[in-house]
Image (cartoon, rainbow, N blue to C red):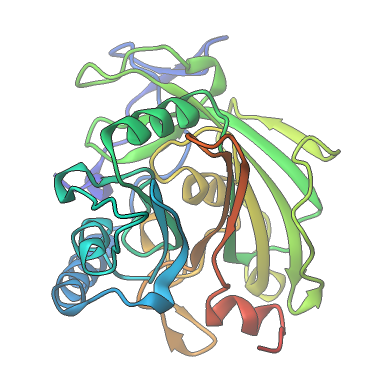
Length: 319
């Protein structure tokens, strides 16, 4: 059943967020827009067609050694396609051939998210990456093109709950709901993302990544967001860099929606389908970088994917 048909249950107030009469926590972000199902189906069909014809080339490779390879995943290509295409690029390192069945995706990006994707070449290295991500030892940054009212903040951190609603869609929940049971047996889990504004309507500068704990407001989500304005300033073009501390499904997309600056093209989470008279084929989100301690050598590795054209244009960068 589509989440857009989700009824709004009666609620009461409590110190532990909002609670429905059946004692489940109530999501604080809106249900999926009705039109999103049709658009997402069309995009999925297009992506399936593109993925079936896609093949990796050396221009997609960001980094490679005998233990892992990093790829700049294009928008609209499934991660599984990247994984299945990797063997065509692999070469023996120091005479050691890679066993194809041991290739693993260390991180997964949404279909329409571009950027850094790491594939490990052995089960052992894969397990070390799992632990590194679980222990929050991998630093990630994303670039997003958003629209909405220009933020009054320059840096902000959002802490909330995350889970599936009654009809299966990912939603934002109150931070105080973390650990509470949801329909279907899952529980609300915590998620945290820090953001910094890089540009508003072309005014601003592209700068190096900063420390996410270096100033800024902190929002602990306990109630539904209040939307500001409509039209005019609400049409601002905003480029933000996101620093997700956790790694929940659609985390950055959900938190952008909650902040009132939905990602352009992200029809699931109230993003505009067209921007500047151009129809968007997917959401404008790019996995900019991954930094981590190499699971074998112990060296500090920092991988960066070149910015996509929409980011260069919005940031007025010349390439």
